[in-house]
Length: 365
Image 1 (cartoon, helix red, strand yellow):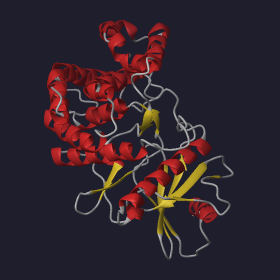
Image 2 (tube, helix red, strand yellow):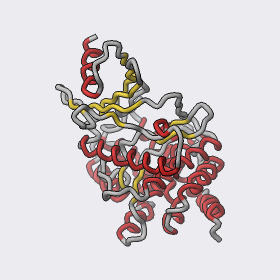
Image 3 (cartoon, one colour):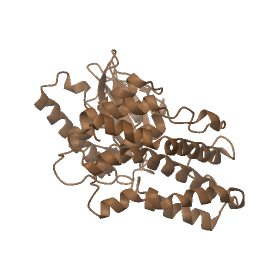
Image 4 (spheres, helix red, strand yellow):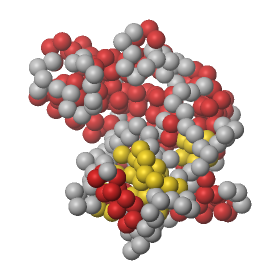
């Protein structure tokens, strides 16, 4: 009851007092704790923002405000119906602030609950196609976001050079004393390091622009209606500047993997080319109009890059003694690393096929 009363007081920072308010847990809450709030006249989502990950809550919330406002404008220009279900809507406090800090130092925000919506964790080609449409349209609508670049909510999140720097420090420090058993895998990572830093080099050369990226393009970050049509893209905490090939690649890494992210049986892990093609078709249907030639040519590379990057992140954490990712058993991060690396080798083996799919969809000779 004490926690409920405290949450009620937080809710009333954003809404008028309502003795009939209901507050119930919502979702699993891997990063933020979420609650569904029901009042006499509406439904909302209350979230505790994970301040240990997102250090600058004011800038984080301003990013979301800018992005959602611009998407709403684009939808209005298109004459879209039922707009309130097709873009997240933040609920400001009575003084206009977009978050509240409680006495414990926790940060909270509210938004309207999108009714009659659902999400999926599992994927098939039809859902992959619709997810491609959704993320492609998301980037298309934000390609002309005014007001300068967004704030980088997690610095160097998809910067491969920075991730490799951290990895090499983990190798050199060998904090958990695990290096001797994985030297072969370290060599495999280093053998690919130069290629995998290509995006940063292209950006410095002025050939690869940074755009508004979602940076967590999993199918469960899309809401669908009762007919499995896309409503909107959600979970906007990581929306920040990045390369489109990263967003494309992260969906393939997560959605087109035939096995689990931590599969022990590596024979189950490979790239599902039907999922790849379906997602690419949907994505390019909406994104082709604004992509540069360099971006198009590197979309398939993005799948390799993000898979390699995740392998490096799991591997670094394993060498550090499992300080970042939650583990279920001592070898969990190593198992994850090997599963990601197996997916990477499958992507390498199918790379020409992936390029052919992109070229065919773009009608490139």
